[in-house]
Length: 340
Image (cartoon, rainbow, N blue to C red; front, side):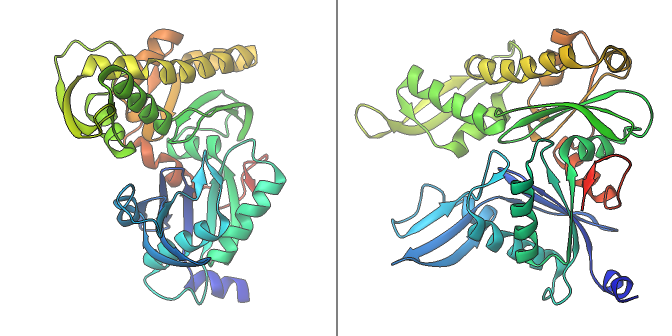
């Protein structure tokens, strides 16, 4: 009785705690928060004070005095700073609820398939410290498949490729469970770093991560580019130390992205090789579903399709598929998709 009363006055919430972006969805409202996973802190003699959270903090990156740091508490999808992650989540959850968390929400959080028990305990502790009343965990391949509206409870194989900021996870799903999964530490941020290295090597120009990300979004492609797209890029000259601008072409950005894109494709091919024959036959029929923010890289779906010979489907708004699926997975499913 008491639990049902608490459920009636608190939110049902799903959280995708991403390396680059933390997304929160609420039952009956859908996606309500998508903020950068970043916190700006003022630190003097060991005392920390939160200055900004989310996009406001990310805007300070590279522009702060020594006593102010911008911290990214999630690295490659895992916690790197518990205290800062707690402060960030509490701020975002309060922002979503619009009131004091006197009755915490029930939270379903996405976790990688191969998350060990110690990491799960840390995530549970983090969510509870941030104000969650009850914490459930759903494996990312399952959340992505449910968010993409795949019939995962049927005796049929489905392959989901979630390309995040820090990692890319390939999952083969059947009968509501993950049959095979492979994770590689390649995602949107590695693509950004590849672009930064290319600009430094070819043009002798230092640029920041925000500029690298902008180049990826505006000029990036997973296949050779025929259009003569050019963008002016400003940065610091390596030799002189002075600001300088250069013109960068879309073909250059394609060349810079070839290596990280190939690593994602290799992970998919290796997963197909390890998939049981009957499920592999199903995947050949149903195709590959690609989700995550990295799935929006121009022509990545076509590149993967031509390499594997399989159809590749990218759902609408692939970057929010994971958190949408987690919201629909708030009740235990057959198998081991949701951990209490």
